[in-house]
Image 1 (spheres, protein in one colour):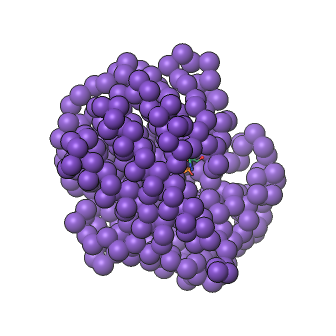
Image 2 (image 1 turned 135 degrees about the vertical axis):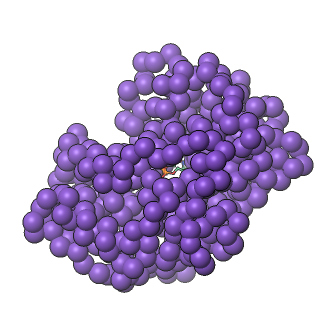
Length: 338
Ligand SMILES: NC(=O)c1ccc[n+]([C@@H]2O[C@H](COP(=O)([O-])OP(=O)(O)OC[C@H]3O[C@@H](n4cnc5c(N)ncnc54)[C@H](O)[C@@H]3O)[C@@H](O)[C@H]2O)c1
């Protein structure tokens, strides 16, 4: 176990949902943190609490621009690479999605290698697996992504492993399963099931399910995911490894929608079924035993407690729940007209 307190860390995508919680965790552990984000989906408000902290720095830039990347990498000891475009974005913009998620990762790896960083954490995704062939899913489960997003994330993984094997870059690859919590996206094509449903129910709108709701997911509370990413970088045995982070439990989207409808406490909120999204993964359930064994990490926040915290976050959102609804688009994917 290595403690890097006082070292300078680069977090790409640090203004985003998971990235901003990772920044909170790193600042708490006395790292110096530089966020590198183009704010396409991230929000500077997510980082407001750190703006006057001398441990913190924000650089606006694009992970696909070699000049921006070289500038961001200067003086960096550790990289957490989270910047990416999302799964539903990839349905309508496959090439742009690939450029950021795969090519952007390659550029980050190359710059990190040239800068001789001590660790490079590549944040992958459970989407690289596609639908589970068996559960729970260990890291040896076949990778057969359903979307360009999943394929691009897998390409990024492959580049990270290649930079480790060919150039000795000390990479760590983490595959988080679905993550939820405060600051999660409710808006546009970035909008996720839990925050969208909460925003809709609080506005007396029906909770929408795409498909019949039998799809399953393994959800982790965001502060636990962020803690897991830090634990992964601090664990020397993680170098060269590809490991899952998840909660090791499975819930169907239908059960989740019904649970949220009750927990939000709006009696007239209904659950409606709508057409399935193309490329939707039907089953995900993590085997996290290898990560637990190597790092000792365990999720600390129970699913229901995390949902309560998330509901409270949106109920008390500074924009007001009605204003949030104006950017909640209902269907968070578009039909492919190509
Ligand atoms: N949210 C989940 O459930 C989940 C699950 C598994 C894996 N992940 C992974 O976690 C990471 C973070 O995801 P998130 O949910 O916080 O998403 P997010 O969209 O909130 O964060 C991504 C960040 O990247 C930034 N970004 C996008 N394109 C960029 C570019 N070209 N240059 C610089 N910055 C750019 C965005 O502005 C945003 O702040 C991603 O790598 C994602 O694949 C997320």
